Image 1 (cartoon, rainbow, N blue to C red):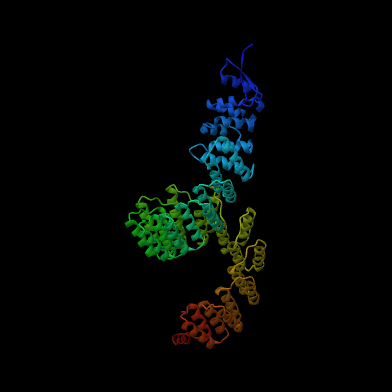
Image 2: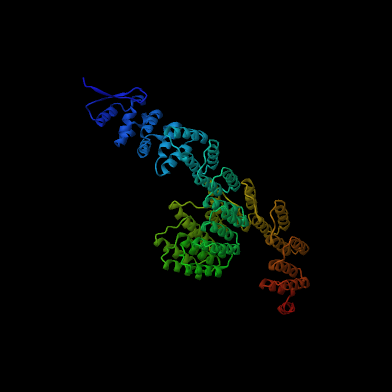
Length: 631
């Protein structure tokens, strides 16, 4: 009979027998092939430790289904001084089957590694599994920390960081207070992670509460902390307080950095307060802090939004003179600014300069230029630009396709618009609500209302959240087609889906009624829109004035004109043209002539429609010209 070596469990528990004179792994391989379903109690932790140290991962993975949490804990304790090995062992066992104690022990061992990433990954897996609440995880980490003799707060700090990265900031805050209750002081980086997450989630009040708690706990803030709080003030629109906060920082002996000032500059520019941003830029320079590319890009962006394009270009040149290299972002800001103003020549010149400087055009660059070309219905040039984009290895994205579909829809090429819709689906790019609205708009403008309705139903079935713009496009199409019944059924559907109608919705329906001569029904809609809190605009009043004037009901037309004046709206060219046309049709040329004089005195220039109405009303061209010349 062959002698046997006994490999016992640490606490002595049942053990397995391995022939003494055979090598360990030849014995293990035969043992596992014969007893692949061995219960955990028959597997020695020493065998698993030896296997890990000898890289026997295949063997460990084979046994993994039979390893219980207790056995794995024992192995982890044996390997805790070699955390790299312990982490590898953890990756070869079924982590999801472990109890919370063993998971937290594995996390604690991993925290000994130089990089926090493995620990964060294990924490996130544990949090997302919902095996236990964050309070239980915290307590189990505290026990594991004691078992391993870890003296730092790294486990709790990383737990809070994991919560923040998962946007579970309230659980992170709960851990913060648990640390406080146990007498632990969180690291400033941990506090910053919480503050930053509150900021990203627009929970500025929570950020201030936490900041006050940090102050009470005498946690020393870093410049990064102060930058976050300045960002909080900026998000709250308290720009003066944000500027004053810099003085508070300096009194605490902390030097603001370029990010501190850039945060405030960006906030001013985002709100269209470019002069305020300039003041901050100058203050920054006076402190010996040189503006960087972000500082200038923010100012250039603010100027472009404010349509101060020449100043934006001058600032761009100054930026280059300072030795700063503009990025694709800076060029794109200028290109977008000139595109929005319709100055395609300047936009393309900046694109060319960008390429000459060795900066590749981005998908955003092409999207801006393509959109600008479609605004001028330059479809062929837009098409060429998309081809150039693809030749350079850039793939059109969701925005590109939305621009193309919207562009071709607006320019009347419905077939091309739908071909791009099909192409984006083929490429696995999902159309957006804007994409579908463009297609419905295109069909509606071509009176293809059955197709528009079918597409709308298809969109609804897909679960796309429809909005007022999409409804307005459909309602406009049905009103133009004379199908007022369908138009009003869509208004009811808007109410069912909690999509509030706007002034465009009501104006479209009013125009539909007026086209059919049902001006009183249009008048009722004006009253309804007021009841629902939708403010009438010029179009609303002009629609009614035009409707009454076409019917010859000039008293009602003037009554609406007076109502329009009482609400603060001045008559427009359309208002006067409708009234002049109405009075002329009623053979009341004298009143029409008085309206013409009033119109000109208010600085409104008559157009062809005005003169044609007067000619019609006065009976001869000479009299009309004489009337106009005498004004």
